[in-house]
Image (cartoon, rainbow over all chains, first blue to last red):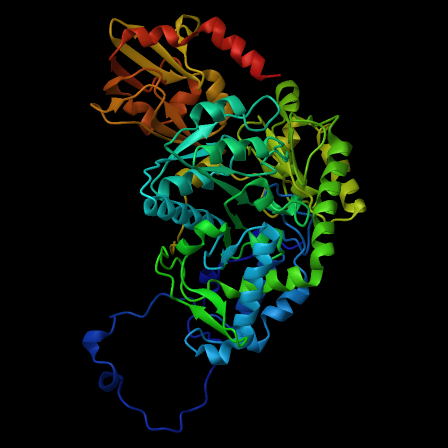
Length: 485
Length: 128
């Protein structure tokens, strides 16, 4: 196997004079550099870049890339992240020159196909949400949350209502209270009850005429659908507040429940989760938001509009808009992939996605729950949260040890220690794209790990180029820059 | 400090009150839950704390968690040794790992904190 300790850094491989290309002599007259760029405008020294051949660089990155865990190589049950397979046809579509090679400063007339796709995607996302209007601008789920809360704030401001609080369940994604804070609200935590869903008494107690928005993730982060959603919606709307859905878990209800029918007024999507956009790589991502009609005037401008003659345009004429949150039309690459996915699944396919995501999660839960108890119920939606608390107490095996050891089995770790309401949490989301054989193999690995020597597990992983890393040291004294010795 | 003689908040802070001066820390249970500690942020002397509101943050490899004031009052002393070396808190949450001292506003709030037995009972209940 490829060894990391045999891989020098590019800086260490540098040899003076080595280069990726040696150009033939120029056939145009040379001009002295001082004539072209005066000395005063030039740095005294060249930047300290490594000198390498093209092959050095290609090998270096190719070898490193082979060390990555990725959905194309490994089962990746990272709870809350919906690491489903990203169909290659999405990539082909997004790479078409008619889409990928366009420039946002072109006239709308020359971008009709691209705008048509974005327009239809707005429509599709509105239909799936059961809501009225969609903005594709936000560049990530968290920015979608922030944008939607700014839309809600503008709505209340317009009505002359002073509402200062956003209610957030204690099982929420950390982005929810962060977005509320950034949008100028006070985030108020709502406790979960003994069943892992919203504590309705606590919700009632904290609901008031100061409440602007309640942000719910449904199904929530422990993988449970909150059946009180109708009651929550009624209480909230009686109070004049708005219901927000964190759409991170849409994979569980796609085509089966429309958030609008649950009383949701505004929500964001995570296309990289639900609609198979690629994760990671530093983006760019997208976090489209959908809202009910009374909030539509405040959406970021422009939206993609359609003239009666069937041509598409960017609609800037939106006097109540909160303004732009992202340049141009948002990050179109990931939006095209979402469009391709939605259209290649169709309504029946999207429904099957949700059904199989839930089926796979429940199957896996059944295979491991006797060894890894699932505190909140024995059924789940698209994901579930198992606990290693008994293993930790009896044998000193913690969730982190299990996650690290799974790497030796060529599986990515589940999300660990989240949500915070489950001790020693292992949050597992297999997604619908995994086969029964993969789920069986993963369950076997988890069961085997539970019987292994705790000391052996504390030092896992054992088959990787580097073994257990010191996370405290990495956080406290990170080495972020190569320095010559 | 003897843990059995302290009072506790439901959010795992401990408090020791003498006259109107309270010493505040977090419980062994909380420290164990956080796992490996990385950093702690505490308020400056003179900061006004409101019972139940955040007065600082503690970061572990798991998460960043808020610290909540068990009583209202004004910060009179901060354990800078723990800020410089958070490992003190992990090793000794009840002595060297104390966090802040407070001049409390209202001694009556003390009565609303949990005593050791009630806190232990709460932990046992949560374990189910």
